[in-house]
Image (cartoon, rainbow, N blue to C red; front, side, top):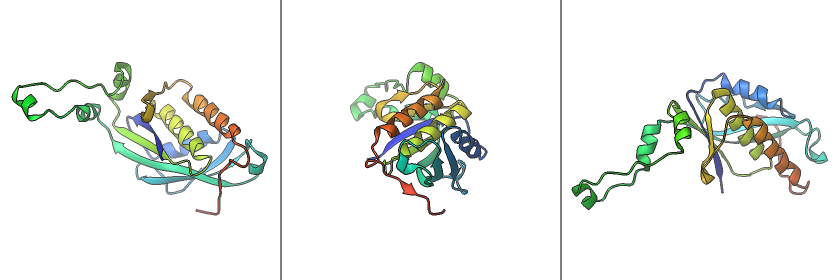
Length: 193
């Protein structure tokens, strides 16, 4: 099973990833991203090397770990996305001149924020280790903050407010990680790029 978070933004530039890593380092960890990862050319696995400075379990103290998520960048146009949501009219509906109903992509205030967005970044994770949630949550929240983007968890149709999104996601991540016993922790030690 995989889960995803999407961030809609006006544009993506290669200077965003170093800014994201810098912000990640403000949250109780020392982080590096794989040197080849950039938003303008990235598709697939996005790995992060990290060490927790305040780990939730003693077993993690001093360990250098690796985790990450799948990253996909696509073009986005709200009008096209809304058009794709409309149901196809059958033969008789077309013959009788029936109009397709207008389908909302999101609430009107969210659609107002989405109208200028031209990119959608999908962050996909599979819970292959206990820290994928940390990176997918934190990177998506920081990207939302840096680009003044729009963040959503589409599986439950949740649209997040930008105010304090990074701090809120970080609190959720910490709560999740602290809920795990040492036996439940799954992690991968870093052995090189």
